[in-house]
Amino acid sequence: MEKQHSARTNAAWYITIISLAVLIVLLGVAIYSVGQLKSVPRGASSTLQTTVSGTATTTVKTGTSSLDGNFPVDQISITSGNYSSSGFVYLAVNNSQQVRGYMNQTNLGDCDSRSPCLGMDFLFSNYSVRCFWMKNTRIPLKQVWVNANGIVIAEFNATPESTSVVCQYGESVLEVSPNMSIPFGAKVDLSSTAG
Image (cartoon, rainbow, N blue to C red; front, side, top):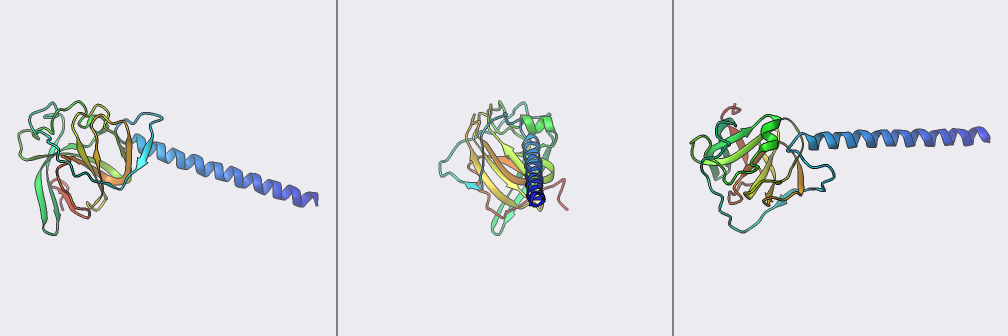
């Protein structure tokens, strides 16, 4: 009888230890994923968002900015059925560009004098949870998550200066004017990655 009790106790300990190990691994993956993007403050609350769309019209200026010369620029096209939009975007491809993004900017920039400048595309090397916030970002932005196939899967209208963290899966995140209407399921292509 004592052996059976001891075996059950050992099994319970093994299950507890395995459960804790799995929890630690999942927590580590979540922390790593959040750290892959804009510097998100420790202890900030985050929410998983799929769609939040606003109806208000917001004016976001374009013009020269300190982004010019510090970010590569590429041509972008967004298509879905009868919808089509094209222009230029800044590319945030390395960690320092991704941390900086549109922080302390007063407009979307002019994409090194290329028109129209639609915004900024944050490019990552894999499909994972991507978290964004708007601390020190003075202009309203629509954040659009794009999967590994270049398909729009989520969007969020972000509020300037907000420290709320918004997370969603994606391989890239496009930041554009909140007035830009991009349909879910639209195909996003950059000229440098178009095949």
